[in-house]
Image (cartoon, rainbow, N blue to C red):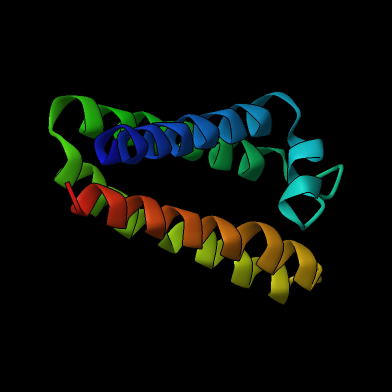
Length: 123
């Protein structure tokens, strides 16, 4: 049961970040607004695309580690990856985003990623 929960949550998080990355590639301004810091309509396209590509790659790497290496590699990856939503939280707070988005989305995501890492380490 723990194995199904641990792998399932980790896979869901990896798939979720792939979806977020795809959203930054397909609808960048909408994705940026959802991130918590709206993009300038005339100047942020390249940076939003970079974020999209990096998010997609992060999700693919996480899935590859789970499938081909195993739970502990996936756990270490998630532990390190928790820095991304924590950094996102700081960015949102420093650039005029709301505390609700910073804490409610980005901090909550970091906590969920850390829980997922802990579950994988427990296997």
